[in-house]
Length: 158
Image (cartoon, rainbow, N blue to C red; front, side, top):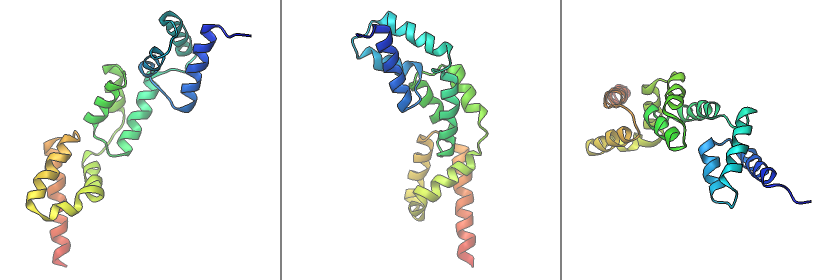
């Protein structure tokens, strides 16, 4: 027995969702590459939103939490959410709901990725620029690098 187009679209979306949580936009983009009619895709997506299988707010909250745990700045997290089709309001809520110490994030990145580069003053400017490109504020980067350098000097005195 042949499945109706509605059932085929539903099965395809459920298959995508089984592999990873996705935003409504991501699902629409994937379905647009297939030969399904837009009206059927819209109908299935709306039904799955009603039952809670597609929830951009839930997705944004989880994604923002993972980004913060990975030391990704608030600004970069916000931009990533927008690129995934999350509305500005939801992205803003997701980023602001997670309390994060930006200084601690920068410190973790310095220790993980940039500590060997900080011995040369020329490279210090490159580290500043890299951290600012990652979305951290200039003041937070300045403070974190100053504290890190002071710690290194203090350890060198021992």
